[in-house]
Image (cartoon, rainbow, N blue to C red):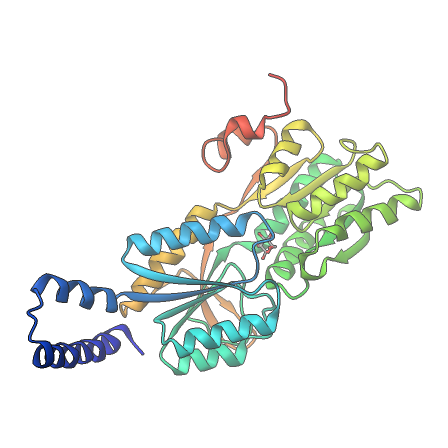
Length: 349
Ligand code: BGC
């Protein structure tokens, strides 16, 4: 139900209740409390369905989104599906039953939500795919970063570091996450035609970080040492580096990841991780909250880019990712994403 429609129904119900109350009790109700009740009932309702909070960044996504939406006068109901697709679908069903105005989704698996999104849209609810695309669903907006660029930045930095030729291990994220394929395309576009060989390419189902450890340990057990390791995110990179350090190789293999997690930034300044891709979460979450509220108010959001979701062309709000190494850590991260004392915790000045 649209906010305006819902507002009208609620106002009607409120009036009936007030009239009955007055008839029965004849207790006068001051205008101020009527206005407050009406205002509360009329608030924009947003349902935010999240994959899980295992990875550091998602708590920040939630906090920034909720505080921005609240600042704009909306109420946000956050549901955590803990990585279980069925749970996510039933949480979205719940939002549909609650007749929220907008549903914002971080899909666990971009291929599993077509029907439930269709149902939401048929009920007049706007749907935003947050950070990850939902396939064949014609969402009202996909807001994320330039995920191809995430991959191309990783490849560019590795290529430079290893001098244009060498062997890599690649440990990508979940195959069910559309960002992974996009980053993979970006990565391949850079290494194509170079003397870089990818010896191993594995996926981490459900973004399971331990995959980084297992793949790296297995590779090192063959007696070979890669020149670089491309990890789908910093959680995977942490585990790959753990395997490297067990083999006294931490710091001598170039490892790249994404998210600018605090421990990844620490490893970068300490020298065991080469680079991470930072995606300004504040910008993503605040922009998403602003657009969600404006959509609930009936505005149409125009974007510069569109993306094919497998069936439909959907509007794509594409934000810029930034490569972070030791060299630009202070400029890009310190004071903006992490504090200096935290990042340099183990480094002597
Ligand atoms: C995001 C990454 C994140 C990963 C695991 C991806 O979709 O783009 O930033 O590390 O999911 O949660």
